[in-house]
Image (cartoon, rainbow, N blue to C red; front, side, top):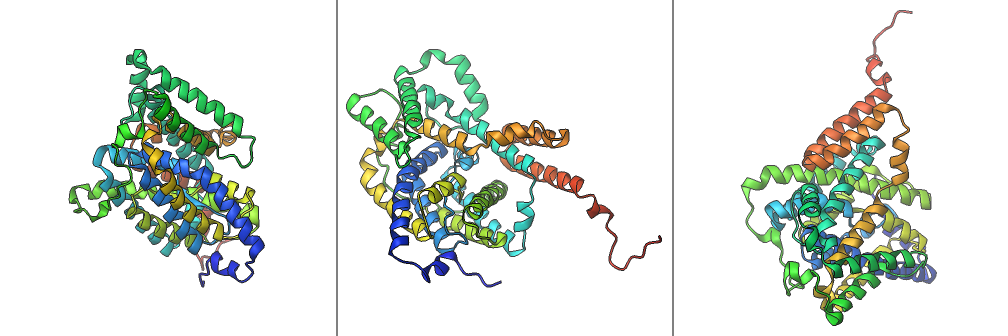
Length: 424
């Protein structure tokens, strides 16, 4: 089938009205996603500039070559657990190589037609991945929320428990003040349709640190004062000893990219009535992640919450995504002087807010009422994601998904081969 990106299709009827709608949606969405790109990068363990650059590149390429008018591709909080674990154990080079391998795998999956198969992954398994990842990300943010330490570690759940048990006396009161103030600000501004709550939160926090001299950990305390320097880590020497880990982590990232992107594309299709090509989406997301591997290494995918906001703000065509990439770069240049003052407790609150928005809690409650085998699959997948390395959890979870699919489709096993005769 001939591939024709939606950006090309929409040019045939583009006009000034649609441009105004796209520009407005892109501007407002940029103000909302810019702080989150910074927060995801910092929570992963890479400088904030990498998060913004990956968001700009992903948004640009996915909008130019993608099969949707409104789907938004960006760094996703769902990758924080696996990406931060890679950085803590093996460094940013390993993260870049893992993202590169994930991109190549996605292109390969699209070439052999695995798109439809990944889309049929049962919901208990997909929700199990999301639930387990949510627990990991929340656990990772506990020390920063309390103002104790901002160091990224590979095993966040034991460290969070240890922090609460051994270091309650080291909790920083100013960090608690920032956390509650940010939470109140987010809840108060949610009713405002066009208020960039996250941007207001990080700006307020940075000003309190700079002029109020709040003694809390900041981005500068984690990465140093040189936050605008960019280094292409893939230009370094390839380490053969990382090959096995890179391929395993790349496979896990590829599956998560596919599932998250299909959810975003499904939402976009529901909102606009358009159809999309499953394998084509894998090609696009694969190419986007290959490009992001050279721009900081953060994995990217379609993001359902951004896609919904893009539609709610009135975006008409992929031009909105292209303009958003431009606005992200402009925001990076304007906000760079404040980066080093942004408090880590505020970053953690933004991550937690994104995690709770990502997790479909209504669907989790519904899984309790489904047949016991499906509820067990959800629990098993969630526990595997929390207790084991994510590649192992993804592999076992996919096997559980295959079992559930076969159990629902017994005709697959009993269907006779072509040409086989049956006695009445």
